[in-house]
Image 1: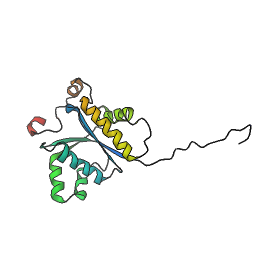
Image 2 (image 1 turned 135 degrees about the vertical axis):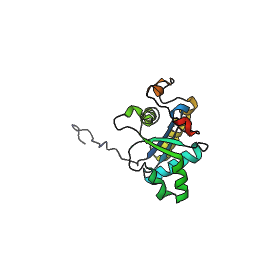
Image 3 (image 1 turned 45 degrees about the horizontal axis):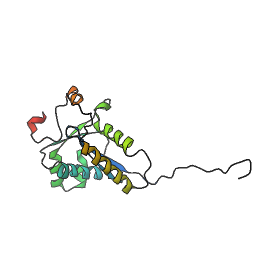
Length: 175
């Protein structure tokens, strides 16, 4: 540093780690859940699906899971993670549907994740524990408001012909 040159500092960002967010949303209930994990593996996905079946909607006969095209988000992820009987039990309760490749308007998870990043994660967080606290607080607030992803009006859901609901307890109602 000299009189003519100020001290120079490198504003390099030091990454403290990364995390994965598994988001589950039931728009007709105004309910969402976000689970934070260290990675995004088949095993993590399988555990998220078991939580969905056993804790979030234990009374449901069938849960329709609208998912993206990521290779770890497969029914087959259940089988290397759990014993065969448990994997089969979970697989029978889950009905997977894909989001259309050119139809991002359908992906309610993207809408929810956008709201989460704008309302709760608009800054860098120091660690995964802080991330989990922030996400849990956001989820609790959104669920308390029972704010549906598509807004207060049910019109958008019906405009696109969505007749199935998740979870459905009676198979004939979902068809």
